[in-house]
Length: 373
Image 1 (tube, rainbow, N blue to C red):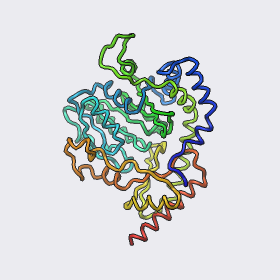
Image 2 (spheres, helix red, strand yellow; image 1 turned 45 degrees about the horizontal axis):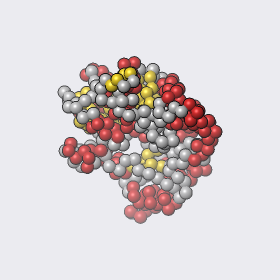
Image 3 (cartoon, rainbow, N blue to C red; image 1 turned 90 degrees about the vertical axis):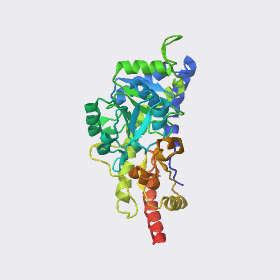
Image 4 (cartoon, rainbow, N blue to C red; image 1 turned 30 degrees about the vertical axis):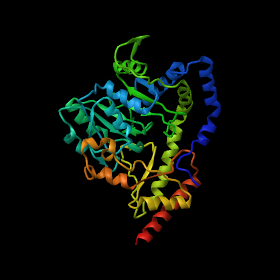
């Protein structure tokens, strides 16, 4: 069976470096934040090309903190997309704001800039874009609208670490941005983790206070704070992994190129179309099939494991029924959610594995089509 994701080979290759980093944390007894996390923050900021990286305990906390640092509070609207992992909207709700949705552009699976302006209200306090699957959103038209209206942009980079928009890293365009180090990410911890990314010193200082119970000084709390501190062990793991990220992303791009060539002529299958201004990191390689369940079941029988990201858009989740949206409200998001399949994608896939996946996808699509016909 070719797994959808395996971290075994990656972990084995870095085992000695990671164990040495963990030993340093144990010896220093710096289990929450500490110098190991601070060292990773400096390396991360340098890698991304921003002035400040502030590590926290999860990508969800990073989004929560980014919204707070952008000044979003109760009564505000935040414009975002319904086709995303639900943490994007959890963070909006945590600060008491209301998510206002814009349908997606099929070519990027991210916010459609042409629909953005119609979603902006007098209460709009931020625009939260999501670089889904590691393909950058078309940021220039979004930034033009945001700048003209004086609305900050926040990038959800949970899936786009190392992806480039017009040659520049995602996570460097918004006023404050958020990423995740969940284990399955391109740069993944051995547990939960996240970071805020910004060029604004005042935002960085506030984020550092907020993550540590809003302490300006020890036992002096200036506002409502949180326990968002990153585990020292995760800082050590991520420090060992970061130097490998470009190599891993290069391999992901090689695999994606093979997939695109090998699946381009499958009639029933829609494959991604990377935009010329984007260099995705291919966190997920999505394809879209009208008979998803049958297609996935046949792939499983042929020895290829798949996943789905994500089967129900946020506006149709019971938790957000109070917004009043119905099926048909955001048709592109709904269509992709009903047909998306995630194929195996991780750097340690061999060329033989990749060719096997391609052959199995072609065979499964033919057989499902023949059965329907």
